[in-house]
Length: 212
Image (cartoon, rainbow, N blue to C red; front, side, top):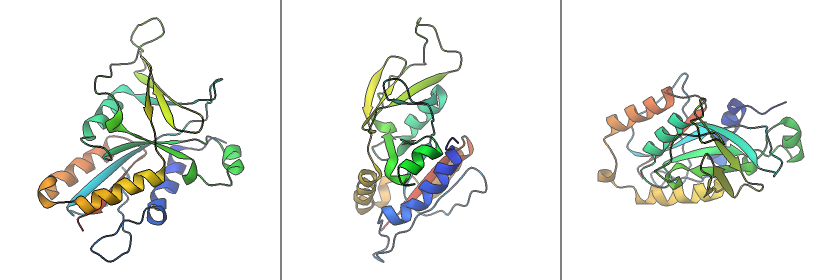
């Protein structure tokens, strides 16, 4: 059976607490805020938001790459949120079905590759067919390389590197130490922006790093 985006979301978000030791207020205890487009709970706390778009795929190409689909309008919107590295990630699992999950000892978190939307070139155009015509579905193919170290994004193929959860956690820890009041939007504006992000798509999550 195929692993769904919702299954990945329900595994990924609680994993923040154990994998990313994000300190707040000097207490030494990790804290996170998880949000979904249904039943969103939010608190107006200043800090840094990191946004995640979760994908799933059970299709592996002959070259061993796992193919994901990304709508052009969604890709452009996520890139627009990614003002700096670590703002927005695509979450791309290297497992696609229950058989693969069992073979990986049911460790989904260790088999996630994260693509930083800030690393995607800003001039990406709408997807096209092999004949050069606009693809009516508006879907970009995102082919995750075996081992998960990079993604090839089509239609004019280019490669973008990916990272694992440990690298993302290390970046967020550095970000949290660097938080300064005047470097972020106002609390009200930022919460509204995150609410809009979550409401406009499925299988999304957001993590808040409160100001230390």
